[in-house]
Every structure is written in structure tokens, then in C-alpha cells.
Image (tube, rainbow, N blue to C red; front, side, top):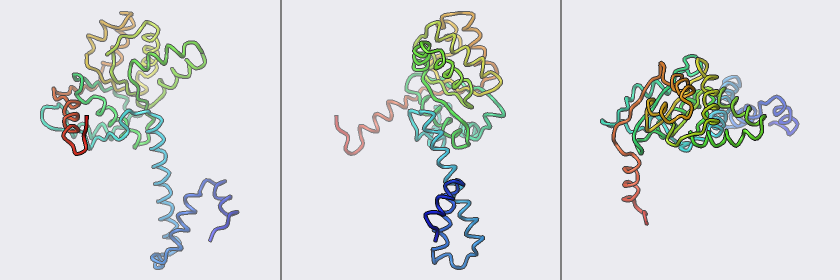
Length: 255
């Protein structure tokens, strides 16, 4: 129906998906009972959904989640884990740009913190928000390396300062040097009252203050994270061990 020249025009107008879907629908004999207007609107809806899916996939890829399939719906909400399903659903639907709350997730090692914060971040991507995931040690290392190039270093500070939702995993599991602490302060100061931050850690604010190298900066960093933050304290269930045991008993497992 459409020619090569037609598709060149569609590409220039950025409506190739719409044109392709419309052609598919209008040449399908099963749609003979529908008017051209109905087919066009259906094609428009399909093209918009495809564009949304591509955008979400791009946001998820850019965020660099270690668990890109994590889902709020698939979180284990059993008794004893300390996770409220309704509360998590609210976080999944949260308007991060309008209400820039911080969330602090704590649990012992293996408690499922990483899965939970990835699930929240992926839900945010599905709602169109920009998200960045990083472990604290990776962030500190990358910032210190970038200091050798002032332009790259500033660009990195700007990136982590501007993203709608910043997820920092394994917060203060490993100590950081004064330069990294100064950069962390800059990022959090830039985000205060402007963008939301989710922290996952095995420890709590008192410990963070003790291990950060500069006590004045430590108070400022922790204060910015903790004040008015929502807190999720996971129970003692060792999810890492349970998943390992499940894998061990699955068909085809070998050591």
C-alpha cells in the first residue's frame, strides 16, 4: 500500500511505526468491518504503546540495574520479612518528581535489599522517571577516577544530581575516602528538596556518621538522607540462602 518514498516521509516525520501498523490493520481481512478512522486510531494507540515500551526499555538499560527483571509484584511478602505490600505498591506508583521523599532500606546481608530497590527503580522507569542504580563502592571509585578529568568529573556529579530517582546500594558497607565523601555530599546537597534518593544498607545512620572520614561532612550527608525519610527494615529471612537452596534442589542442578 505504501511505497518506499512514503516510508521515507514517515521516517522524517517519525511516524514509521504508526504507518506500518496502519498498513497491517487495513490489509487484514478480519478488519473489514471497521472504518478507516477506527483502524487509524487503533494504529495510533499501538504505535504509542510501542514507543512507550521502547522508552521504558531505554530507561531500564540506562539505570544499569543488576536485577533488571525485579518487580514489586514478585517481592516475597511473607510474614517476618517486614515488607508491607500496600506500602510497596504506593512506592511503585509514587510521583517522584512532585514529592521528593527519601527511602532507607536496611537489613542484614542476604535480606533482599538489592531486589527491593531494583523493583522500586524499575517501577519508576515504567512510570517514565529517570533512574540511576549504583553501589556505594562503585560510585566512590568512579568519582575518584573521574577526578583526573575535571569535565568528566563534573558531568558525573551532574548526572547523579539530576536523575529523578537515585538508588545507592550497599551504602557504607565499605569505607570511602575524603574525596569520595566530598563528592557524595555534593550530590546529596544538589538533590535535597529536588530529587528522591533510595539507600540500601546493612547498617544505620549512627554507623554512617562514625565511618565517614569527615565528621562535619558526615553529619550533613546523613542529615540530608535521614530527615523526613521513609524507612523499610527487612526481617531476618536470608533470601540469598533460600534462593541458593531452591536452586540446589531444582532439576538439572550440578556442583
